[in-house]
Length: 117
Image (cartoon, rainbow, N blue to C red; front, side, top):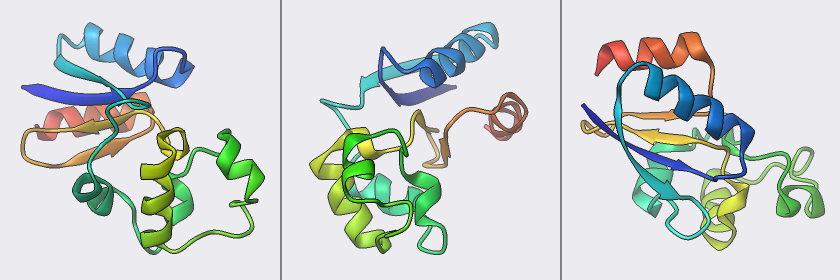
């Protein structure tokens, strides 16, 4: 199984997720989220219109400047903003070969994701 891993070298959560995947001996193709973000098509599958906030990086400058915690955009606007500034995307984003997506890092839920793939 090969996964696409969209992350950032300086991101602690990305480092933890990558270390976990390495321990599980999972092959990943890494992408720097700032220069090679997920496509609009991937983001459209990732962002849940009923819970847009879950896909936003609350530590990003754009999030803070636009007070997106209280002024949560709709899914289309959020995706437009993510493509404009990929640092707004909660990291990491992991894409399985079958198109299934995983976002963030929690050891138990990532383990469950890996079992399905």
